[in-house]
Amino acid sequence: MSFSDLFDSGFKTRNQDHFAAIVRVAMDDGIISEEEKAFLDRLARKLDISETDYKEILKDYQSHPINPPTSYDQRLERLYDLARMVYVDHIKGDHEEIVLQKIAIGLGFSTDNVKYVVDKALTLVNNGVDLDTFSEEMKTMNR
Image (cartoon, rainbow, N blue to C red; front, side, top):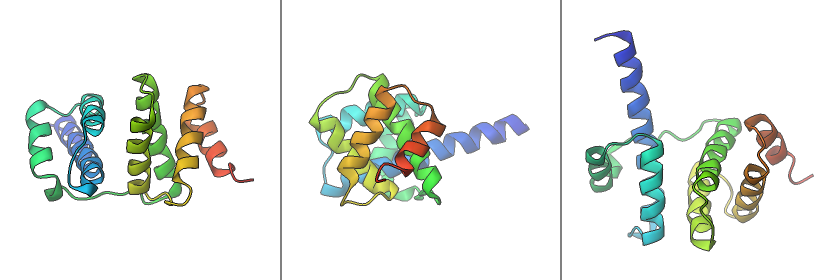
């Protein structure tokens, strides 16, 4: 096995684990709604999850380890990536924001202010900010 195969395998596994964690959040109420399924479909494409892997993860999402972000900066980076996916796909509406709020809670953001965090994240992404600006604005949004 070559070094690039190891990297590709590790990257693929990390994406699958990240996707499985988001499926776990979507399944917190026992079902995946049509809106959540549509979001998961788009996310699977973005994370390069094959159809076979997608079905297997949906069937057995709890077998994947949860790799939560260990720092606030990593949580912001994942939120930035997810908000950009929502923005790039031109997803609008309450359903998509609710899914993003659930995922943000899964990333470790407080349930008390997750609506404001998601609103701010989507506004910043809509304004075309880069990751550094996004992170700084999110860190200082309560000041």
